[in-house]
Image (cartoon, rainbow, N blue to C red; front, top):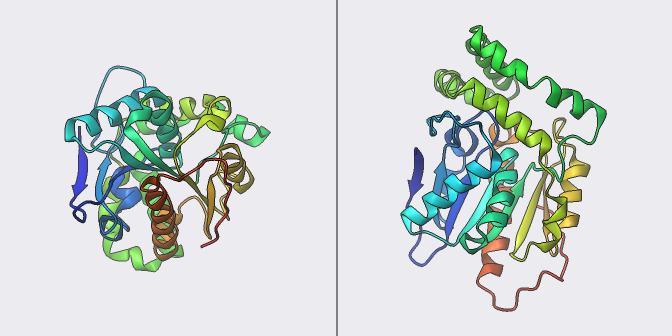
Length: 276
């Protein structure tokens, strides 16, 4: 199992970073590894079928990805951890809390929805997820990666020194697992257990997100008792295109959660909304 690990301050918490769909830990978090390491020991795995992650004949499921993360925390002896997930990584973080609550001391959920397919547009999106696999098998992944990077460079020219690396990193992973992961997200619905979450939780809302509606992100925050809300001005690729805003929102959310994991007086009954 491939993962990044950085040292943190003595006595600091473990921070588990869970990346989004079809990318890798490095693509999601490379902009913020250093500042997050100032808060605690950082562990960032590649999910199965993604990046350099586990290769398996099993179909991808959020449950299996959560179990992988649980096994890693146990192996490293770093539990309980504050778990920070971006997009699909947020869904895996929620699943990790549900299946292994003893390993999770707090949650940060970024660009994550309470449900992924309520709107007609989203239902159509998840129905055509299989095209991801087909395009990759036909050799379209390289061209797709180049188009994504070109678009990113137009929006954020400071990415130019990393263009070749971004192209290569985007082409890692298994197309069948990507398609499975897309379908798994389309079926994910944490509304039944979100009101039972009993650890400090922060929700980072990407306010200009066209893929995951900000209203759905706020609905997730409303469903979790005591969740704090932080705003990140940017779209779903803010982790690339808005590095300073992404860093500020992620650090602020983690600091909020970490402070409350250390407080014996934390109560999920107190609702708080904090802007960045």
